[in-house]
Image (tube, rainbow, N blue to C red; front, top):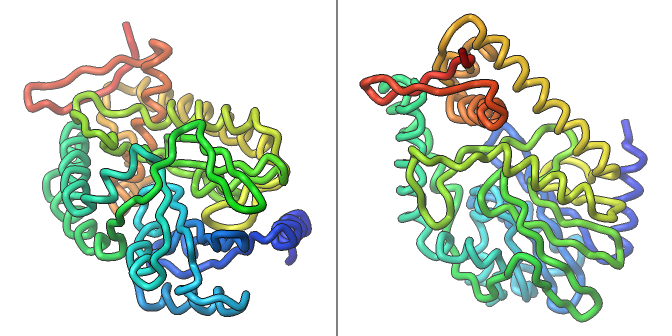
Length: 338
């Protein structure tokens, strides 16, 4: 069934020279959207993962518009996740395109393998502190190592500051850092067209997961980022923008961003309330809470569900509705005060 508002938004964006090219990924989220901007320079927003299949689909999409990889003059990166960055350096090697990304992300991309090692170590420490068993952590490590090849580093030619701008011949985008889903989430607003290139910041059909991720400049797992609180603040900032369409990193365009944000904020409040109810039965680790909420999914997608729980616990901690305690082994449990 056709989604008339989304179809109309895509048609209007195509008339403005912005075209979606959806390429396959090996992940449950399915295809990732890249966007071709027919302006000077010819620009691609995000790249898809590092695979021959993804490259072939991207080349096919470019050819449908009369272009080839070698024609690209600029590649813009929305955030650090591997399904968005995997092909960047390969495209640059074939085109000589300028790479643009958030200034704080540039060092991470330049030393991809080193920072991925540090990110993985950070995640393992977080899992240990919050009750995920050693055997499960080992299994997750093996899976993560396999996924790494889908990503890849790149040299950023043009670092972009939050609040800055990116100029083309016929348009200018303002740059906005919107952390939460990842530490580097960056959105690009075309005020004249009331359009936002949103990456994974807002996705219509699924809620973007606020993953607990090592800060771009490094950090201690004992002082983990409060990813959901950051993400909720980012969504509120985006809701204040005057937009007709958000071009999302997955799925269809978002044509009522304020309603979507309001619904997501309410969802997070309901989930926090559910976790508080579960903790009324007694102290629990974040992993135990995740198992109570999602059953075996908390095992097969352990870090995803752990991040969900920790984000909503942070909401409760911020309000004084939950407290935390750590045992002799360093494992943290959450409980109601009093």
